[in-house]
Image 1 (tube, one colour):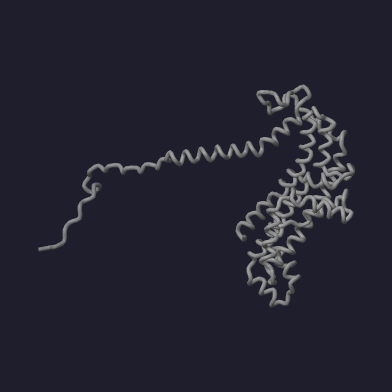
Image 2 (image 1 turned 180 degrees about the vertical axis):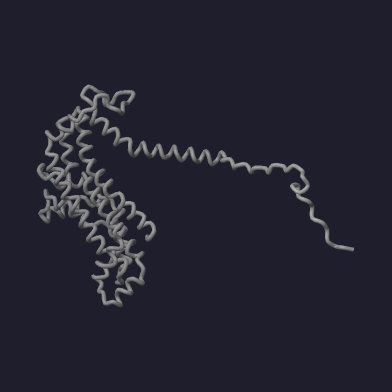
Length: 304
């Protein structure tokens, strides 16, 4: 007897009509996922309103005409009769360009000193072995959590003993290098591969040559991040320049704008115009360097 059995005939071979294959249904998005998506967008819109809302309000106020209400209800964001006359009033009231130049000198000096001194200290903490290195890292970390108000008096007395009061150098010196800059460079230098450094040692490169020719070019993104942070912090600083500077001719832009509130107490439009003049340079700087900024943030995230 033959043990083999015949295979069942296909419908096409038998001539019977073929039934359509069921199409798998697309998975529907669950209600929980939809609710999470809605909450996410609501939070994003809320954060956008909190962060960008004050800037847009100041910009709108600076462009509103004299007859338009500033604090009326309902609030009006778009000016009906936009004008730039309030910016001209600011220029006629205070020496904006001189104050802006003072702020530029202080902020540029702070950015350069933080990049130079922070990179040197960060390289020493990351690549050099010496006694007390962990303690030094802890001290730099501790400086980041000490509030400025607690050391403000001692810094003022130090500047006075150095005869740097009422000078731009006295404004820039306390922020010449910060713990944040040192730790950012330390994390960036720590991520460099040891093999590259060992190859440079075999080629006869000294410590200074390894820092200048190998380590520093490898952390250009971190250099840009430190430069932008230092520039913005120095440009926006108000309390320390207000304490150190007493001569109006040496005021920075953020301190000089306060004279607007004394001259135009009831005109919020002029005060808003002065605020926008102080903010616009920072926006221009950020948009010009945003490519380097985000590359530096990503570099620190990957290598740190």
